Amino acid sequence: MSNTNSGNITALPIVVLISGNGSNLQAIIDATQNDGLPVEIRAVISNRPDAYGLKRARAANIPTEVVDHKAFSNRAEYEVALQQLIDQHSPALVVLAGYMRILGDVFVDHYQGRMLNIHPSLLPAFPGLNTHQRALDAAVTEHGASIHFVTNELDGGPVILQAAVPLLPTDDAKTLAQRVHTQEHKIYPLAIRWIAEGRLTVSADEILLDQKPLNQPVKYHSTVKAC
Ligand code: GRF
Image 1 (cartoon, rainbow, N blue to C red):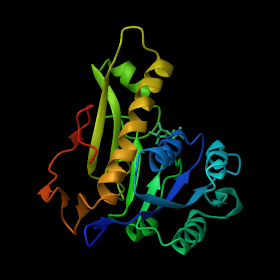
Image 2: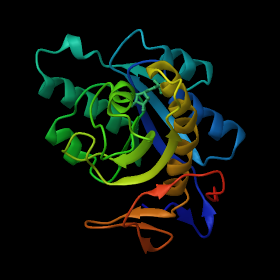
Image 3: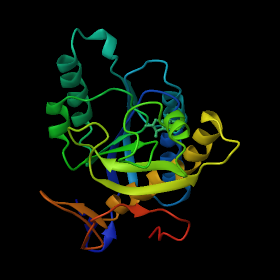
Image 4: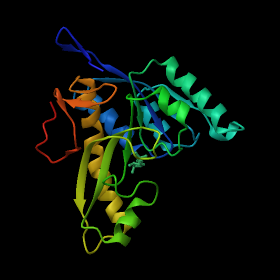
């Protein structure tokens, strides 16, 4: 998914799917507006009409759409409608940012190698829900967030980038979630930047970062080069 044109970077067209607050969406919007992230957010689509992230998108003059899953009699029909709507915007990348529906195989296969998700744990630890409480219950020393490509295995696709936070003795699920969120807002724009700049590419059987096979996730720390 190279995005260079005679050495110049053109804005990568993306569509962002949300279900709720949209703080990760906001981080991506902010990075495009203030930090030179070379993407064009062609649309923000929510399955929930009341998602706060829709307001964030409108405030940034980004087109918004709602495909309410409750309006469909089954998941397959809902996903056909969602896919058609996404594809009208011809995105090179679909970005799941707090999108809280499990996606079916046909939909996932259609966007293979061009759909990212952010998950609030250091995958493969704690796929699924309630990750912060589960990390506390397991008394792990480190927790965090992961950016991964979406495959048919729930939260199981190849991980690109992770940020870790230590567990503190005073943590509860809320304080831990807040610290993880802070890291999410750094790593999602960065992973998208790698793709938009053509540094991270996907072929049938491998992911390359700067022309080298990405055999394990990059661990984010403040010195990871942004460009
Ligand atoms: C984040 O914790 C993300 O990891 C998970 O859903 C949450 C979305 O938060 N997939 P927000 O809507 O971006 O604020």
